[in-house]
Length: 478
Image (cartoon, rainbow, N blue to C red):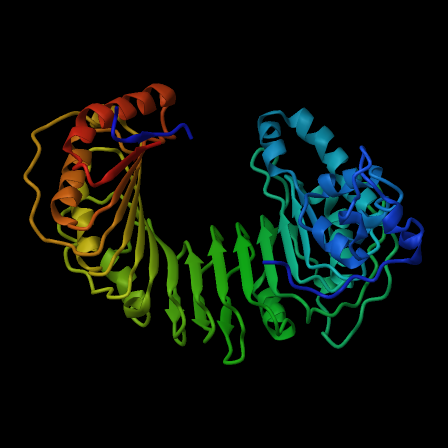
C-alpha cells in the first residue's frame, strides 16, 4: 500500500430583528413537516429564524418562502444581503454578450430583493459582479440603501477584466458629516441608469468593515472614513486608480486590518495605527510605518526591480521582531547572495514565499528565510515558474547542514521534480528535525500544456520524492 496520500483536489452578533405582525398569523404549533412530524424549527421566535436565514445565501433564504405561510416573508427580514455570483459569472468574462445579458439580470435581481427587503438594519451588504461605470447611478442607489440601514460590513466588488470602461468612483455625495441622518429612500428601479441622483444624508458610525474592488477611492475618501467611522476595523481597497498618498494615522483608530492592493497610482503610504494587526500592500513606494505595536501579520511585495530585499526588511524594521505571519512576493533576480543576510524574526510561525521566475533558479537561496526564523512552524513556497524547458535535470548539489528545530509543515506549490526542487526538498528533509508533513501541489498556471505538466509533476513526486521521505513524515500529493 502506498504510504503517501493522493488527493484530487460566530455566531453572528447583532440586534434583535423586529418582525411585523403579519408573521404571527400562522401559529407555530399548527405547522408541521410532511409526514406529521412536529416542526420545531418553525416554533422558534421570528428574530431567531431571521438570523438563521441570514446565514444562507439569498437564493436559499428565498426558497424557504414556499414552506408555509409562516415562512413566506421571513427571508425579507434577513440582516445579510450577499449578492455574490462570482463563481457563476466567471464563464461570462470570455463571452461579452452573455455578460451584458446577465448584467441586466443581476441588476434586476438586486433591485427586486431591495424592494422587498424589510429589515431596518444590515450586518452585511455585498455586491460581487463584473459591472461597469455605465450603471453608476444604480450602484450608487444600492450604496444608499445599505448606508440607510446602518450597515456594518459593506463590500463592493465590480472587477471586470474583459469589459473595461471608466472606473466607478465612490460618490462624493454620500460623504457627509456623520451627525446627519438618512431619510427613507425610494425603492430602486430595474433600469441600469437612473436619471436623478438624490443627495442623501447618512450616519457612518455603524460601519466596521469596508471593502472596495475596482472602485475609485481617493485619499479624501479614506480620510473621511477614518474620521467618520469610529468602529471601522477593516479597510480593503483593491485596484483603485485614484489612491495616491493616503495617511492612515490616529491614536484612536480601531483599524485592525488594512489592504491596499494593486493601486497603480499609489505613491506613498504613511501608517500609524496602534490596533492594526494585519497589513497587505503591493507597493512599497514611500511606505512609512510608525506606530504599529500590534502588527503581527504582513503580506508585502518585492517585485520592483529597483527594490532590494534588504530595503524591504528595512521598511519593516519597526515590526520585524514581532511578526508571526509573513507573506513575501518576490521576483527572480540575477546575482547571488543578496538574501543571505536577513534580520532575525524570532516570533515568526508561518512564512509564505511567492516566487515568480522562469523555473531554473536556485531555490536553496530561499532557505535563508528559514534560518532567519528559528521558531518557524509552517513554510509554504509558491513557485510560479513559466518555462518548462528550463526545468531540465542537472547534478544535484549537496544540501548544507543547518538544523531547524520547529518547522513541522512544508508546502511546495509549483513542484515539478526538477533539480532545483530536489535540492530544496533535500535541505528541508536534512535539516528540519521535527518535520511532520510535506504537501506537494503541482498546480501550474503558465503553460498551454498545463494538465500534462501537472501530471508529470505528480509522477515525479511519487517516483522520485516518495522514496526519500522517511516513514514518520506524511507526504500529501494534491
